[in-house]
Image (cartoon, rainbow, N blue to C red; front, side):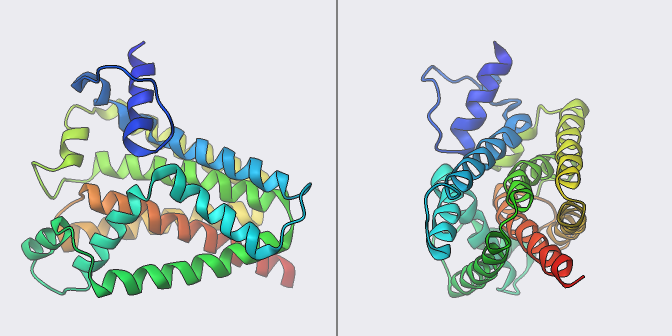
Length: 259
């Protein structure tokens, strides 16, 4: 029962999916990060189901791209995008570490964040068009699976790396977590990575390697710029890593087509 309550708490905290209504306790949220990949699995399942419908219902490419792009936003309510914007504003400010942390707490959105989001959208759109235009189920399946892998990596790094704030949301979510929680998340990431490669060697391997490199670089970035991770950097990781995964799949498709 405790695990089911933690699962429901994870969906309640990290998504807009409907969850059972009951009185939440601190114990319910103690292990909710372990179930964060399940939110990604649900998002990926919806994407895969909708993509399958495109084989039955004729929809122009731009329409398919718009629908599939909207699913993660609707499922999460843009929860992680807020962190992406805050971190981009802080990184582009070129201020001191303390000032950057203060910028991330500022609810206002700066010009740097808007430019970064537009750049992100252009890369996402181009990559998604390549993936959908290829017309292969395996490519879309790896794209859908990436939402699961990205969240597993996000949870693992959130537990392993030091926290930039001792009073932040991420610190409260991870303070009671142990090594078993980290290995559960790492194990989920490995299972997802293996499944992606099994679906297609080219696209799967490209996606896995790109996410591995990005995870290492993002961790170093957080340590150098902020002294650790926060809830905002976790959101930034999810949003950026999803784009890295999709772009790597698109590049693999292009290379595969050229050979």
